[in-house]
Amino acid sequence: MRFHALLGWSFLGLFLMIGATPAIAGETIAASSVVNPAPVEAFSAFDRFELARVTMGSPYAGQASNDRALVDLQADMDKRIPAWIAEKNAAPAKNGPPRVLLIEPRVQKIRFIGTGARLWGGAFSGTSRVLLKVRISDKATGALIAEPEFYQQAAGMAGAWTFGAADKGMLERVTALVATYLQANFVQAVGGPTGSP
Image (cartoon, rainbow, N blue to C red):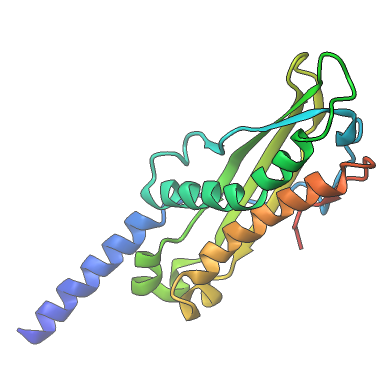
């Protein structure tokens, strides 16, 4: 009886693990290069900056683990970028009317292993990966200034050892790359790392 109960719990855990870590068969999640190209012009050519909320489309949206990751991504973005934007927006405008740079982050691809899956499946749940693309444009004209991409991953074993903290750390690192890119390209258009190994 005890064996059957254990077997039942094992199957339940496997079901939850699989259900919490959806993936598209054969899909590759990776950056297209190691380095992002430089923007068309330095961001200092603009007077005001606006950060849109992070978005995520199908087939990733609507999957519980990915939706939780999106919430965490937004929280991490809110910690890193709005203060920088507020500082830049406080400076006197150089142009009349002021030029506005619109920053639109979007989850291009993601496979996020949630805490429940890590507890049940550990390293066997697989590697978490995220590819974030940021469209940076002139708000008035729609002209594309830059479209960098940022990639990070959390290995299965690291996720297991940290009970999912490494998976959340992956999200923090990818937003840090976005913040670094914005800062590095303010005075000069130089590009920056994608985070790809």
